[in-house]
Amino acid sequence: MNKRRWIILIGSLLALFTNTLYATTIVQGQDSSYVGQLLSLYTWNDGWGYSKTILDTCTVAPNGQFTFKFTVNETRKAQLTLGKFEGCIFVEPNKSYSINLPAYELPSAADQLNPYYQPQELLLSLNNLPQDDINHQIATFEDAFDEQWMELLSKEITPQRIEQSMAH
Image (tube, rainbow, N blue to C red; front, top):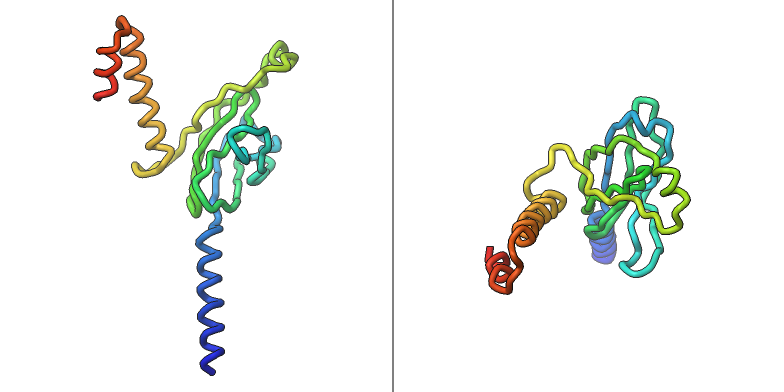
């Protein structure tokens, strides 16, 4: 009987641990300009190669709704090709996100013929985002950084001004 209790205890802990490690993350939204399109949410395997991992794919419903469900065990930058845009969102395990997509636009004919063309990257806007969410923190940092950078560029660049900007 004692051995059976240990097996049940260890099995329960393993199930709990596995469920915590690989909890379902959901990204959803609605945009009628993408109706009928196949969307793929993906992440890069590393920062140097061009190897992607598809997190999930879905076809946008006639009412414009789409949902991605996938598992991640750490915070990841996920991307979504949206015509001439490349939408980005940072996803965390066991969280749900409601995203807004830009209006769908195809790349220009010249861009489609350009072998070096890259879609314009943008951070997707999210609905009902808590203040402690990583997407909010990254957007806040980028806004502050851009403000400091523009202030620095609008004046004569000197080592003293650089140090003053970094002190903020």
